[in-house]
Amino acid sequence: MEKIKILVVDDEARMRKLVKDFLVKKDYEVIEAEDGAKALDYFYNDKEIALIILDVMMPQMDGWQVCKEIRESSKVPIIMLTARGEERDELLGFQLGVDEYISKPFSPKILVARVEAILRRVIGEEKQEKMEAGGIVIDHAAHIVSVDGETVELSYKEYELLTYFMENQGIALSREKILNHVWNYDYFGDARTIDTHVKKLRNKLKDKGELIHTIWGLGYKFEV
Image 1: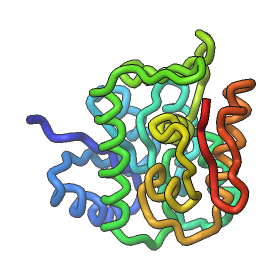
Image 2: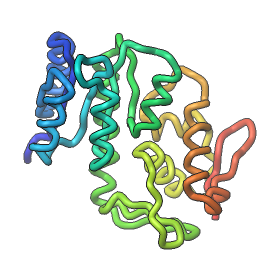
Image 3: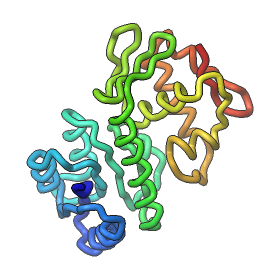
C-alpha cells in the first residue's frame, strides 16, 4: 500500500524537520517546500498529495496567496500554521477555505492528530455513496453537495458539518459534541466557531437551511 503524501510548506528548516519527523513516524510520506512558489510547483506536479500543512508568513509568496491559488482548482485539505493568534487572521483563513488553523507554538502530536482526523474523514467519504435528506444530496465520491438538483459550493469544514448533521438526523447535538466530531479535537475556546460555520452553511443551503434547527442553550439539530 502506497504511503499518503503530505506537503509541508515553511521557510524555517527547523520547523519543517519537526513536523516531518512526527509525520514520518506515523508512516506518512512528506514533501518539503521552503517557499510558496515551490509549494505550488510540487502541488501541480504531484496529483497524489493528499494534504497540505502551510505556514502563513513566508517571503515572496505568503501562505494566504498559496491557499487562494490552490482553492481555485482543488479542495485538498489545508492546515495553516501561523505565529499570529488574532481572530481576524483565523476568519480570513476560513474564508479562503482553510480546514484547520493552528497557532505557533503548537504540539506536534496535536497537529498529527488533526492530520489523521481529516484524512480519515476524506478517505471515509471516498468509500461511501450518496446521502440524501430533504432535497439535500451529498455525493461523497464526487465531493459535491446539491440542493434540489442545484450544486452548492461548500468549504471543506462546511461540508464536514453538513455531513455530520445528516448522519445524525433528528438528534440534538451539543456544540461540544460537534466540535469534537467535526473539528476532531478538544476546543479550548468559545463556541463562536460553530455558530459562524452554521450561519454560513444555512445561507448557502438557502430555504433548506431551515432544516438546521437551533436548540437554545445546547446546540443544533438537523431535522426534515
